[in-house]
Image (cartoon, rainbow, N blue to C red):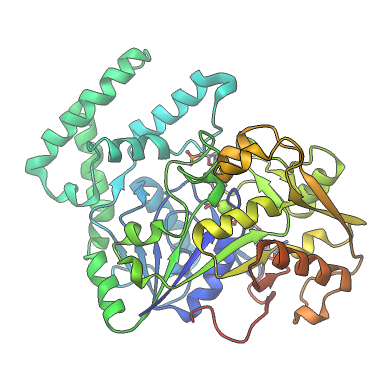
Length: 431
Ligand code: GDP
Ligand code: IMO
Ligand code: MG
């Protein structure tokens, strides 16, 4: 068996969806291993735009196995509407090609409500979550009171589980001055979820292991980005799951020895949605240019993304965190036409002591980015077929990224479309 793990190296929205859609052509199965419907992965085929949230982006490739792994928190209502909207766009989704891990935890309406309430009560200290209930759902998982996909088929046990869950949540809700949730209402909701999920209840891990045993290719699709990782990110301004490549093994139930190549996806610049530090943020005309040219508005919430220069201190660290073998550098075309481009290569005086900290912690103190100023290029890079066809200044920019991160660029993206991807090496994505 060979595997390819695709992860984001920044704060999410790097373009993972486009890369997974392309790499899925070489895979037998595409598996999501963490996160939930806080993810928004966009794939464009001509004029058709697909927004994948809980389904692996490989679902768009007919005949491939799409699997939602145990590390994911699953919102059945969101999944139902995602499946319906893809079916309207003629994407085939059937129990033969989609399976959901029975030990994945559910996101319930009370999780979304708690997420929203907490954000509202936090005022200026809010995280800026996607409001999908991700944090509260993972809290219940770790608190050992979550309802999992497979529990829906065990009506005899479900009432006791619901009581246990509601003991916790109704205390919180009373303290926050909101109505408690009646047991019967939640049981009715779970009954509805059971009928939504029932068709996809095939043993997901059996499917994965059968493909592995048969020497197949498994693509592990990450969501969010490394600086949103619960341990390594800009805590507390992070998501509630582990987003680094190492979590792929636990998130699907594969031995770590079976994890093969790691492809790290990053933009040619940096963006962030929500609150938290962002050393290279450009709250000025350069940031506005990147936002406008890059159409930087969130897929999930529609929020404007904060924009700034590429941060190589961060990229070097996130490559190391996940043992990234190669980079997929996205949205190079967005930089076309800039007179000069900045690359952050250090965090300036005062940061020396912080160098002992993990990258996310290091960013929590004010840092002063040190920039290397590079000439821009006026030509369009969109649709270039080879790296050598790119303007000399663009090639120089790419060389500096490789030198400083000590990681080779394996592919370069110059538009949202599938065909506009330059492969920088001869082999496929799976080694
Ligand atoms: P993901 O969450 O990592 O899958 O990324 P998103 O889909 O949230 O955001 C990436 C956005 O950039 C999407 O709208 C993509 O269609 C778009 N995109 C991907 N690659 C390129 C590229 O090379 N150039 C441009 N201009 N847009 C791109
Ligand atoms: P994809 O997979 C960008 C951010 C939110 C917020 C923080 C916590 O599309 O790259 P959460 O709802 O997870 O509790 O929010 O994480 N966030 C993302 N930002 N892309 C994402 O996913 C994100 N998923 C969560 O904006 O700052
Ligand atoms: Mg996204």
